[in-house]
Image 1 (cartoon, protein in one colour):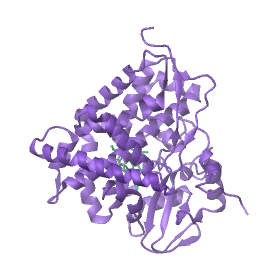
Image 2 (cartoon, rainbow, N blue to C red; image 1 turned 30 degrees about the horizontal axis):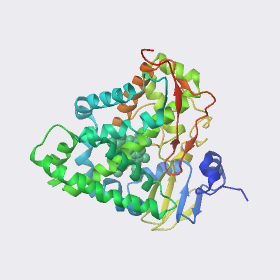
Image 3 (cartoon, rainbow, N blue to C red; image 1 turned 120 degrees about the vertical axis):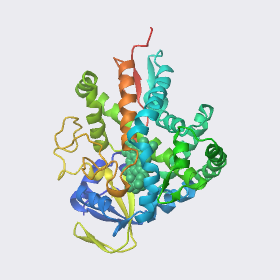
Image 4 (cartoon, protein in one colour; image 1 turned 90 degrees about the vertical axis):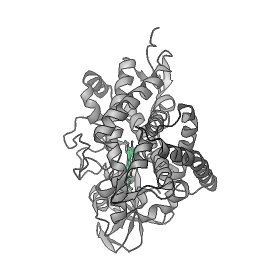
Length: 405
Ligand code: HEM
């Protein structure tokens, strides 16, 4: 029989891509005892699960992974309830709000972080930029006190560990639950105060939002903010780090992006295909369903392997090659079913923050390239990814000519 490393094994964590290939080829529907779920690895099947109108593939099963730390959020909801809850928050992440209110926040936060290291000549891009930037942007968008950015970052780290806790380590779980308590104690008074003094920030928008007579309670808003830490922080963090890792080991493509900044969008799309920040997304079956020749019973948990689907040779030519110029991928981030890759999912739960993520990447990466024209990896350093559920470079030490020196 074909050897397919277990998704919880060190071999898989070191490099999941050979295992993904074996799954696509030999076991596109694979029962996985430890997570109690069916693994889907082919593009066609993962796309189908995401696009499903929730008659078969629902999001109910998120509860163990999200509920104890965030409470109830739109990711866990389905049907009409999801549609209304999503409509309450979605407008803040596109159009004029994104452009007028948040672009300046994105620009200043990126600038601030870069200014802190541009005179040094060396930095770890993951520690000093990628893990900080998106979380600071969210805190600022919400209109939270700058002095709280470090605390916010601490909660972010704990929430991210909780979400990735596939092996259900009790210490990680307990830390996540403590974060819920601390985050609630921090946020609820701020939300209550903001309701009395609405401003231009995202928290005010959420306080005022109303769809079909439905408004968000204090707890709803707090839960959504908590979700943003993980959904908007970790993902964009890993996208930026992954993009630099991919470009730094492909200097010709890095040179092309330096030359023409409009290629950042293509580089992002290819990074999200080639090394997606989120490798696995769960669904639950509401009815029995046949997939890749096998049957999944009703009530089963399904793990959609985005990292595997995005390397499917049936969908992409030469899928294991990083190529920002590939013609089977466009760089649109439309809120539509037009699928370039599955990194933002598809269908009803398609990432609400996709445009924000792109704006952050355009700005952050553009500013980093401007500030460091000769950015290169530290001597002998080979970027390595870490993580199973979410995945990205653990560190990225780079060198450059210091500003002013
Ligand atoms: C949903 C990935 C950036 C907020 C999702 C989902 C994925 C994803 C895969 C679908 C989850 C599911 O179907 O179960 C990413 C990636 C990002 C990114 C790869 C960066 C490159 C952001 C940002 C924000 C955000 C910047 C906001 C600040 C959300 C929210 C949802 C979501 C609120 C839930 C949508 C729903 O359930 O209707 N994201 N995301 N994401 N994302 Fe993102």
